Each structure stands twice: as C-alpha cells, then as structure tokens.
Length: 220
Image (cartoon, rainbow, N blue to C red; front, side, top):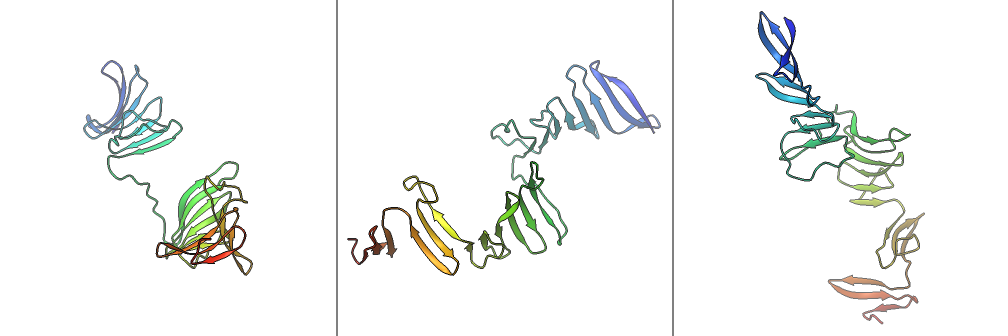
C-alpha cells in the first residue's frame, strides 16, 4: 500500500492510502483558505475536524477545545469557559466503565490534584462527595445519606448540629434554628428571640415562647 498527497479542489491538499492503485480507508483533508483539517471515513463521510477553535467529533463547527456531537440539542450555546462539550438531541451521558473492585469518578484539582471530587466505589457501592481534600458526604448502598460521617445508619445521618436559616433569621452561626447532638446530649436550639412551635395533624399543639414559657393547647 502507498500514501498519496494531492491537491484538493484547488484549495488544499488531501492524504489518502492506496493499494494496487485503488484508494482504501480514509482521507485527511486540509483547507488552505480556512486552515481546517478534516478526517473522513469510508465514502468521504467526514467524522472529525480540527479548526482554530478546537477538535470536533461528529461536527465540523466545534464550540470548544473538544466538542463531541451526536445531535443538535436545541439549547443554549456552550459556556465560553468550557473545554469539553458533549451534545446530543436525546439523553447525554459520560460513561465510566470500571472493574467491580475499583473506583471511578470526577476529580477537581488546583495545587492539590484531588481537592474536590465525586467518586463511586464499586466494591462497596457508595458514592462520596469530596470537598477541600476530604470526604464530606456519602450515599451508601442502601441509599442512606451521611453528612460528616462515612457510616450513615438512617436515611439521613448528620454528625453534629443541622442548621436551618432563612432571609428573615439571617445565615450566621448565631442565627436560625439548630437540631442535633453534642457529645451524648441532644439539642433543639432556637437562636432567635422567637417561639418554638410543635404541630400535629396541621394544628399547633405546644409552644415554647422566647421567655421560656410553655403553652400546651394555647399559643399564649
């Protein structure tokens, strides 16, 4: 077999492979006017193109450094900071295929190559969320969620106090309402100058007001 380089429609060149004088396989086509390099397959069906913007697979107009195209999404243009764009006119996935005893995931790095991450452990079937170089949350094989613990025993297990705040209370640690455990003690903490109200069946049953008075069957 031989490789041949020829002019292409007067605007560029192409490379093709021949055996016994007959063309086989694919072509690599350059365009002097644009500077693109196109890669074809079979009967000159373009499969990939390198432009000044990036490399397009399935598209001749990549929108990022690497643009993998299976169909027109009809949505917004890609973020200008995106290095990788995956586009389809149906469901779109990134597939990780990993042995059953290993881990797969996404890692985010700066000066630390795994400062953040979302990983799946196939051996124990749990998903972990990594923040500031440490695991902060885990979903185990039963669907239990652990925040601050890697061994959740309930649908939601929180290590320490869980806080609830809104725009009225403010969002500082001294604002809002906390519930949780400290040591062996259980805490219900109203940090505002306001009430704690307990309801059942859509009606108030008990209230602790800001002065510590307790009302059962009365809101005053």
